[in-house]
Length: 353
View 1: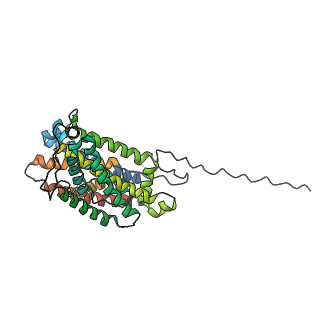
View 2: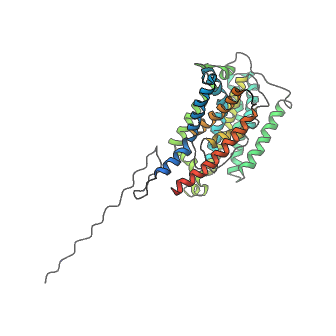
View 3: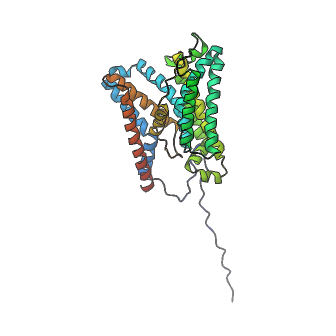
């Protein structure tokens, strides 16, 4: 009797997982469900909703107020927004990691005073002195938060008070105002322009372009999102969590100091009363731009649209004439509440749709 040897079982090849692209999201397993149309719409609204609101407001304002759409008005809006934009860029990086920096308003004002004082010694001291001091304040924040495991809210609140106190000490309680020498190269940095658009705007655009590349195209940018998503998981993955936090707080201090120096060059003096409440404006712009306060998600482009939206609102209040600038805080607060509620709803929709 002949025995038939059974043929060896042939295993079906395992489904291949697409390779990760350096410029895209992590690979999705082949058997993972594709996101639904509702989930994609919720994600798009969370990321670009502020741009749609900005365009709607600009178009409506252009029809209501003819002077709003003028080139001169656009130049005024962008130059005023550029200083907040530089500060908000640093705040974006901090919030993506799950932190907060309340010191940037005082650091901004301190940077302006230091730049005006150092401008008598030339262009480089006027830039390097505020960057060195403000960067050191940011470094102190980062070390105490990352290595000392202290609460970001408390530490940056302390440096807010410390930076403002140092500013008052340098200016004799505000009695001394340092002036930028006339016709100096440093003054030209704040008052010069290209095609009518000031140098501070060009600096802000360059910084935002660099920030976008860092977030989307470098391992450091991906580390920021990982740290903000879960610090413990990032540590288990071997990522440098403490070093990353120290670096982002240092960058926040540097950018706030740079914005203060640009503002001093623009005003030709180190004004001591600027920057009050600026940290709240920066946080508002970042959150309105779609960055989650809990960390782990955000974009610099959204922050840029958020800054422009706040600047447009302020300009519209000025166009109305019968309202004072205090109403900007009311409108900004209203936008912030709406955005936070919308983010919570959209995040829930993405999970359940």
